[in-house]
Length: 448
Ligand SMILES: *[C@@H]1O[C@H](CO)[C@@H](O)[C@H](O)[C@H]1NC(C)=O
Ligand SMILES: *[C@@H]1O[C@H](CO)[C@@H](O)[C@H](O)[C@H]1NC(C)=O
Ligand SMILES: *[C@@H]1O[C@H](CO)[C@@H](O)[C@H](O)[C@H]1NC(C)=O
Ligand SMILES: *[C@@H]1O[C@H](CO)[C@@H](O)[C@H](O)[C@H]1NC(C)=O
Image: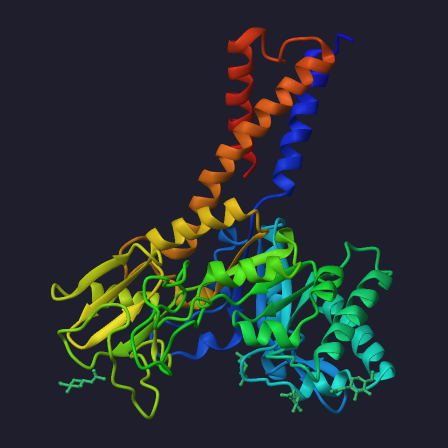
């Protein structure tokens, strides 16, 4: 039973490849409208994407046409290839990123916040329409080079719940029936954070059966509709204050889905680079839960033009003022800043690192990032390099995975040593094992 060191090295490498395959997902949304902003700090296009920071890229959004019952581009002139010059369209340019970054998976997202439900109701009206919709979807995804579809129906309710499940089933069936010889198309859905939508619109059995990944939109917990200050995406609920709903946090939402039967290994937890902005009623009360003055019309941020929100680089600019007070809220594990009557609750490197740590302990599949264009992608505003938030996400994933990996490698070596009756491939005893682990970790880093 004495196998050669070579065999054992190969086995060890296979174990490493196996651990690599289960890498923590980083699913990043690319909004199609971000290339029209005035400011160069905010104008984001396909060329600005750093594909090393994501495992999945999602093009948001395409529309569902209620007459032809097909997915259609929002802007056919730019997203389809040019009929006259043959120039590649934006969908293909997006998917061309995979040539240089073969680890990437790309998805097309349909629906979104402003698309409503009518389009989805139209394609689920009867089985024939639904089947044709699913088949033409496969054709489109294959033709333009996507690896899958993200369904962002906001939101199915008690009436449409069953048909949402039927939609997922039909798509999954068509993806499995696809005979292109390529890897099966991936099916994901963007799902709500709030208890009402979760409890009325979704059959957890269907989500588990048909989805590869469930992208939870765990943000927008508080905003301009509130009378007091609160965080956009707190990790934990505010239990210390009975005026706060205990269901308003990432942890609550994730645990709620899990308690209803959605498996952790399907769950991708959302984080956002946008912070919520409030106007304080009084500069004497500036904590979490302080009274605010609501405005009738949304206030647009200067550079990103976000309604009642700021993109992360705009928050960096506020932090550059010496009058700005920064507070990290220990209870909810997210920061806020106060500048005069301005209050902003947001996500920073510290909170994101803690969130990722929590996600890994929960054993979820990964994190979702909304959205690429709202990080400091130029690196020229926050002075922390390009994509500081997205990098913080990757770094904390890397750090935690390496710790887990070292443990796995150790177990694998013990296993190998036990069943081959020999020492580890690089020498006997504890030192040999240690050396093997070091080499294994180096090998892994090299392949990353
Ligand atoms: C993106 O989608 C919007 C609709 O939301 C559309 O008006 C716009 O033309 C699209 N932009 C590009 C660059 O395709
Ligand atoms: C559910 O959504 C559909 C489609 O938008 C709508 O027609 C219906 O009135 C809604 N039902 C409930 C109970 O809200
Ligand atoms: C759901 O789909 C069925 C056909 O499968 C259709 O008869 C029904 O009207 C749809 N329900 C809604 C609420 O759209
Ligand atoms: C807002 O501040 C004013 C004093 O500037 C105070 O009279 C009022 O009660 C405050 N409103 C709330 C909701 O706290």
